[in-house]
Amino acid sequence: MSIDTRSQVLVAQEALRSKKGEQIKVLDVSGISPVTDYYIIVTGNSTPHLKALAEEVEKELDRAGIRCYRRAGTPESGWIVEDYLDFVVHIFSPDMREYYQLERLWSDGKVIL
Image 1 (cartoon, helix red, strand yellow):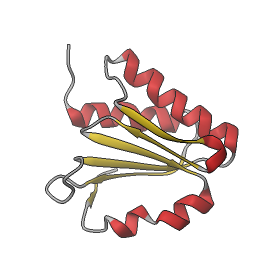
Image 2: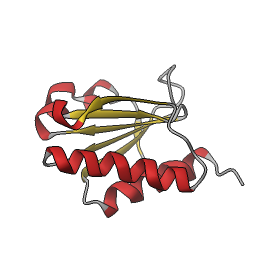
Image 3: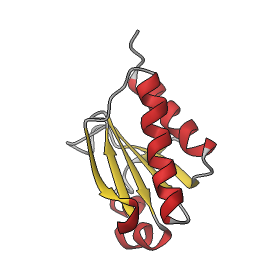
Image 4: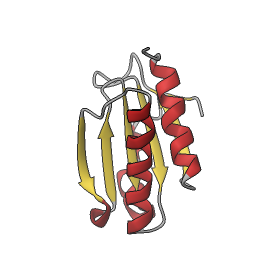
């Protein structure tokens, strides 16, 4: 059984929440971004926390039959990006989140969660 994109985003968001992800924000960028429909942005407070957040998202989405298309970055670098095609999960350290400022970059997107 396949679940729709919005439901997949909710699974990812709940996975991040279960591992105490901070400042979780979901932006609907459909019609704005040629790359994806949703960006999920979250902050982790340490290298192990970043790793745990990424692993939990992958585990829960895998359980739902959704596979990560591509993953980039490392916990040690302060950012991890997991691309699920219809949505992208950005996991940042506080410094990297401030540096990349995705909320500002995609400020035309609609905050849905």
